[in-house]
Image (tube, rainbow, N blue to C red; front, side):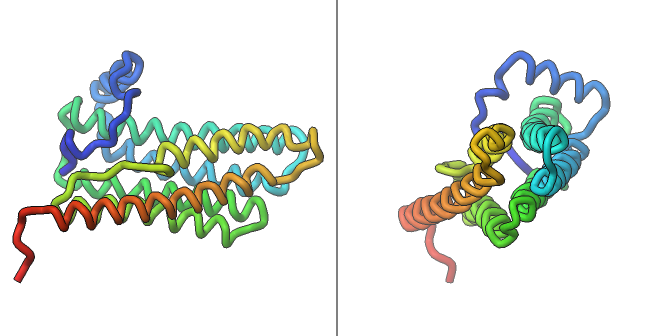
Length: 219
């Protein structure tokens, strides 16, 4: 079960609009797990939009890139509200830990793989997705070992979504300099390299924490 100490530190969680929205979702009978599942749909729609934008032109390309940016941000909102409804709304469930993590991995996979196929570089998309998932694995491995959750960057989830969202918006202007998918290609490289750096940083911090732990090693 996710506790308050295990939550990603987010300033948006303390804003009035977020609290009001969370209260409305709670009163509407929507469960945290349903919100988490909705994040999969948002990730899938973002990935499909990126994939379609890769071969689209003109107004359709603009619409798809805007849609991709929107769905990436809606995915983040789902991630924000599932935790708020669960903890602040008192709707935690025994299987909540699964739904808190599993949909996020599917969403990362859908978004980055979709972007990779859209720009014609599927291997880059898969690499970015794999490394993004590995950052979460390293964090959860630490929790399984009894260490506090490590949400450090430089390419944590909110950084990945910010990078791909900004890239999709800038990509709308690529025809001005006769560009085509260059911005999204650069963004996926940044996400892949940044995620690799994040994995290494979290791994080093985890090993250091385990070595300094007073607990006796298992026999």
